[in-house]
Length: 425
Length: 164
Image (cartoon, rainbow over all chains, first blue to last red; front, side, top):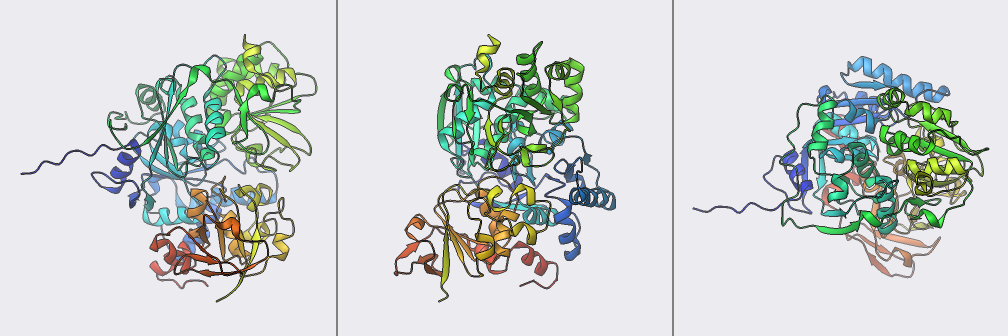
């Protein structure tokens, strides 16, 4: 009689093995996985999927596993965007889709906030920031529309089992230093393709100490690290948050990396991390805030799934409470979701921002992806979003610096890029 | 073998340069007219069917928008040759029928030279006869590109005619 030794597996391997119906999977092998949830938005979804589905004469494999979010072209500003959003609305009605969120906010925030993502799930999203779902211990990654069509008609997708890069954060973050700074530091160190489309796993005491929304920021920007997924082993913080979001009580116990699993580990000291800023035109162009201190800014932008969740709005308000932004600086705030905006209103956080001179924009992707009110020629912008590619937020001559909401708010206050610790002190 | 003209680009060519955000509300024909506008403004009007792109590392970083790969198919580009690609872009390219060759020595190829592709052996042959080998590609992905992308494979699966 033989007894097989259990193979030590990473969290990524365990999540993939479950979706592939296997005991375990080996790094490098190509497997087919059953998809638990397929999410897409008005830009990547209906306008592309509808004609292809009709041409194939095919049906959605399981409507209960599909979530549609209108977030890119809302509110509609011109004839083209009206057409795109109309296609999405008409198709949602035609198909009688059970899970549709229209103008509720950005998909990566709205979908977990409505209890659709749970630990252990295998999910795909029609957007590159889909790794956000990894914060909940779900294997979630972004795909294009044609591949989404494949998922929608078969319920399956292939992948190559990734190696795991563990980002182990020791110590404790200083006041005014956030998940965003951790990410800019890592992206600066490893580059925008440093993740090599492998699985990144964030762990260690400094990660465990983060709120759920801060963890989402880590997973979200795994996209800028070039990873397929950005996973965080679920714990009591995850369970409590998911329960409040209406997800069935998750079993978080299985979803962690086994002792002895083969992986590459990088260690970081949270205690010595300072705020980080990424200069134009790449998130990898990141350095300590001091390097850019004093750079004059025209616009301070707090927006996107990356940087306008409730915790991000709270951080900005902490800096701006009882104060006004510097003359000539425009502070733009586009909360990530209606839920976060309502909570910020309730707590008084929104009023603090408005009193400081903030202009409030719709809870949508907005200027982050070059939609809505975009950045003009030669504007210098400091932004809590994820990407500062040339021309992404509007004009190709706009200079976009990326930073945490604390740093964005502190810079709005002084009119120049500012280390928020000076203001919070 | 067919000769392909090289368009040489630098490192970190992102999806927003290939398919700019301001053009994304349009169909693929219109988006293609803005392809690479901020780095090679003449590209979209001067590229010829059969041309190839040779780029630096990290080609296709950024968004999941597959239009960033589909524009190149639309413009007749037959392959992109680079030392590394964004993983998400890699999937999208094969899904829309664009061949990507991961070639560590891509930098040895020159702007405007005529190269040949040995797709069976995944080798790029320069105008001077240098043979540059590329990393292996799973057979099912090569099949996908030969079929003209995932949509054509699905057309066959659902009993429809593939589109050339």
